[in-house]
Length: 638
Image 1: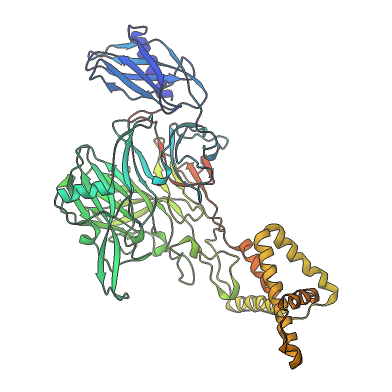
Image 2: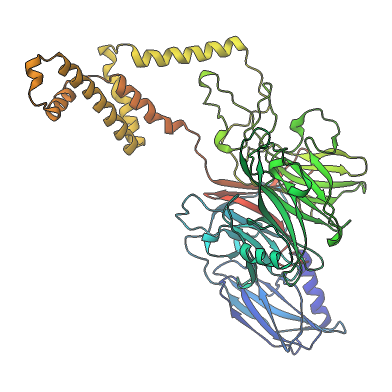
């Protein structure tokens, strides 16, 4: 913001109060204005704006190719009055300014703004700019929350994009060099579908294509394979091409450990030119061993990030289900697709200063890179989710699925509790020597999917915990002695047997009503159903027992089952075996690990011990990918 203000003041010192005349109108997005201004061909137009005539914010400059130019102005809060004026820069460097135009924003969709709260610790200095948030919906999406929003450092909504949510989630949304946004809209992980959509700041669709259209283009270009889905990421290249990440299926027969035919899901990359013609492609089936599958096979590779290396023209792919980041011989579209290296556990690099596999990343997301002070090292920032990590004394691994995580309360009968945790982490990669150094990391609650780790322009670290688990992080757990563990489990077993089978003294009989009251209060439907089933079974046992004791002549007549059941129910004067069982099962939902949809985005100082300077808590939704941007415009720092 300070840079933008200084820039505007310098402009005014050149030539204020010129003959430029523009007009401001509303757009389909109530937080976005359209500023139309005239200017000679070759000149550039930008708009400065802010809550008063000091402005403080500015858009990207657009080159005039027609008598009038329209600039979309975004980054404003709802129901607020702003001031804005156009800045026209002529080919000779001289500048003209339009008069000030007030503009009042509208209201964002009522009741659909995600539930978010920002914490600004005292003394913290968050990086100026914008947080671009892409969210997953809650189950059944009852509130129909927005899924793509942008926030200022105070956590206030300054932009959003609303779309048909049946299309899925923005996986992810990225700012293009032309000032538009591009996103992959996809609602699954292994199923078919997905589309790529480019929009302007007002939310107008500029271009889009589906996976079916992509397959038509692949067939026309002579490719014989088909994409199953467009998913997870897309990358714009300096030449205007798009690298599209897709997955594809291939059938294998009698793979080791698997009989018959297995349909394996692998990943591929398609290079589309400016006319959406495929000009290069890469497939994991051609370059990786299908028999290496650490997790969730036959979802074999599950790529989630694609990044272009401007330094050497290669591309980098993050393969979550391999726990690898690989570099591919792309050579700016002329490479043969060979795997240059594999980074990660059992890959091509040695992790210096470590002998533990747990120090690598596992099931990672958002691999992005930048060059550090040592030119020999490529610095990789990655969110290490930790699925399939080797964490503890027993050799057990953190499970691949969140549903498989054993929570601390579930220790009955020797069930093990693995230690799961995640980390935003930065590695220094020496490609020539094939060595890796751990440069920075931070232990955070276990997030079984998603996540971002990146550096901000101020040098702080910014990370997104997509779905932090409520599980207690216990990294330094000591091994429990075997005898103590056995005694603990034996004690639990004795308690269970006593409750189920010991006679209940009349003095404590009244206490039997307590669990029934608790169950019905907390889970009315489930509690009443369970007790009803228990009582029905109890009565049925009494009726059958009574029927077997009747004289032969009495049993020969018609059986009044309804009357006998009612009579039996009246004779039940204490919880019997079946009622206790019903009540016990009714309690289980109270203790089962409930997945709470939430997310946390944090900015910290890089210097250790890291200090939190900004935190965003999101409730009711998971964050697919939240990133920090300098502004809503390319090459502009607010």
